[in-house]
Length: 150
Image (cartoon, rainbow, N blue to C red; front, top):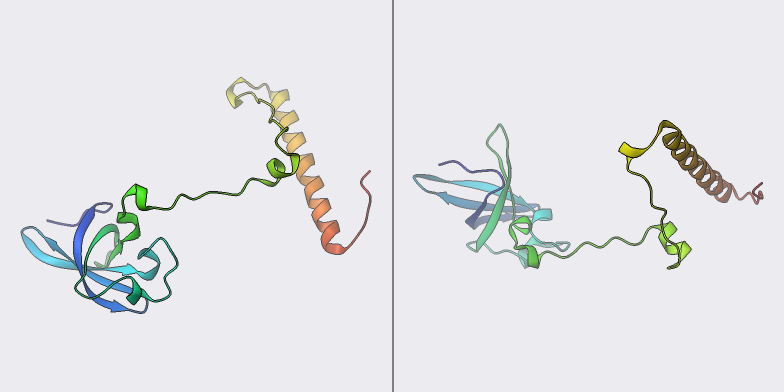
């Protein structure tokens, strides 16, 4: 039996280094294989010392990320965690949403399939003008210029 990429296996930590841990995975019908969990794949939080998270002989669940042509196996403990254990990533609101306040609502735009050539050109010109204004404003701020907009 071979390892399948993306599958979760149960293994045992056989060795720990400063940059990761080596985990042995027993396979049915063949000898066990050893893969490495990089320190960045140990936990969802920043890991400064891997020894605070893992011990030799500890049983862990790992997900197979890749198997190189040389036979090196990359594993992840944090990607093998159940979905409810993973922290939810939240992105800060975009600048336009923040600056315009709650009263601002986006214009409803036509899907690209329903737009005429003129509509697409108008959207392109509007986006280009907004980008150019942003670029001018940012370069003026960096250069210390107090040029007034026209």
